[in-house]
Amino acid sequence: MSLPSVGARTTGFLKLGHKGRGLIYCGAPVWSSPDWQGTIYPSKARPSEYLRYYAQHFSMIEFNGSFYRIPTPEQVRVWRHDVGPEFRFCPKVSKDLSHQLAKFDKDLLLTFARMLNAMGENLGLSFLQLPEWYGVEQFPYLEAFIAQWPKEFPLAIEFRHPSWFQGAMLLDPVINFLYRNKLATVITDTPGQRDVIHMSLTYPSVLLRFMGVFPSKFDQQRLKTWLDRLEDWARAGMDTIYIAAHQEKNASIPQTVDFMHRYLLEKKFEGVVRPVVMDRLDEDGEETEFTLGG
Image 1 (tube, rainbow, N blue to C red):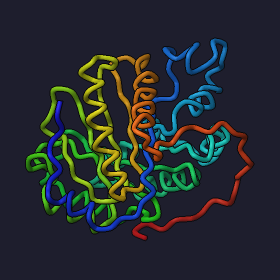
Image 2: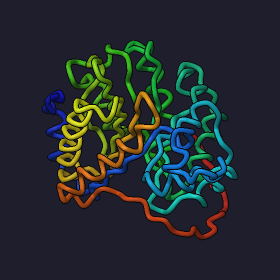
Image 3: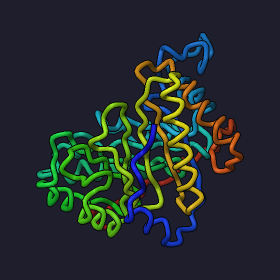
Image 4: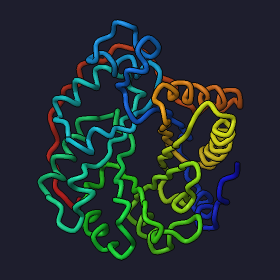
């Protein structure tokens, strides 16, 4: 199984001399799954304890809960006490923002920003998933939204309509826009679907959403191919690379992430982030106020 070649734009981006940390975080799209009872969680663990046990095995979460309902800063601070300082949340932008770009609610964006602020050092890369029907003709609405996005919070964009792409790269005007606004990309790899997989890098962070059927030999080879490429990007100066493992059955996700960890460690890659189990200090600080378009 091969990946699309890295285009000239990405090759040029990697030659800009980024001096990132070259860290790779691996995790899942959920932290609560009945399939993990007795493996990730002790057999008698309560749902309120699931995140604590999850964070002992995974270093990041593709946090999809914020897509449906934005948690309060108070709730976020409770979650932070369950994870170590190395753990990263990658929140998905609320659907009431991402699916309403033509007329988004600025107050809701402020609410989302307050949630991000509450994550503190545990905030990874937020991502905005455009609807599948959202084509390049609606680019101006995305530009208007980004003009209001609080710039202190890193953001990646997931493009899902084929009109945003030319081959395995985003269109040049889109790449220019992302780079100019310090926006990252989301890369989604789904077996049998190659119309929106791309190799565009525009910021020293990236999120890979890997859809698979692990532990098939095909999936193992796909993962090895991806990990080889991501290692190359990390060594070339990327700062943070996040891999969210999606599987047909959640029961396979821990095995998938363990495979990734072992493969990178066998290659003596020192940038793979492993969970550290430790107590958290109370970090309830004052909430920062935000203005849009900053």
